[in-house]
Amino acid sequence: MNLKEKVAIVTGGSRDIGRAVSVKLATEGAKVVVNYFSSREDADQTLREIEAVGGEAILVAGDMTKQEDVDRLVAEATDAFGDHVDVLVNVVGGLVARKSLQEMDADFFDFLLRLNVTSTFMVTKAVAPHMGSGGSIINFASQAGRDGGGPGASAYACSKGAVMTFTRAMAKELGPSNIRVNALCPGMISTVFHDKFTKDAVRANVANATALKREGGAAEVADAVAYLASDESSYLTGVNLDINGGVFYS
Image (tube, rainbow, N blue to C red; front, side, top):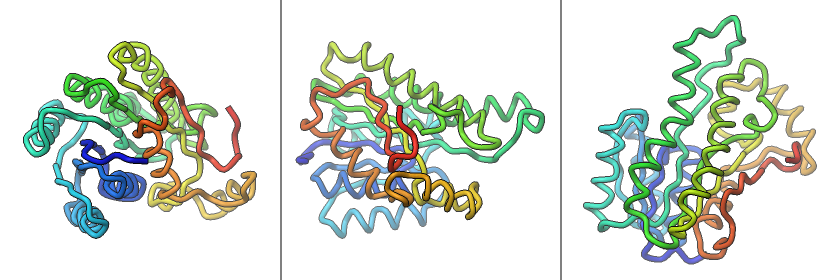
């Protein structure tokens, strides 16, 4: 998958899946703009790993739910690598906390929607004018968007379902400009996300329920992103690709 000289923006690109995606794209030749939110230490580690594979990248701090930070991300990307973006990967998002219906209030529900789907909308809107023919946008949805999620994840599942629908809508809207829009729907991937929010016994049960009898790895998700970013997937758009080891079939 040759991404040589392409410019890629990765939101939430400093750790776990985001880091794996950033490093993979750099390995394939892309110049990578790594957005991070809170941990400069994590971002610096991602940059070191990119440089270790001979890649080129810049780091841009910012909250992708704030318009001024989104605008600055795009401005710094184009200042560094020219006024074009070839690949956008919207990784930003999260579960934050598991809460039942009665434990949630409207502010929490709205925050989850803003974190997961509004951020995707805002960054996509800001980047699309800088994309030319052959551009590729990869959003991060979730298996939860298909099956409703686990206990206490209803707000998260709703937001990821919205990402899936937004992906299909943008595939139609941007397709005439030859910009492809796809999404990944990861299942149980071994990350800090599940270290924080999923009990070990639940993880073991889910892993055993997959056809492959294991959790997925961040690098495996990154490989799928690189494929969707490349010209080798040139006739794929509007796809919400399941990557769950065979635990759930859409």
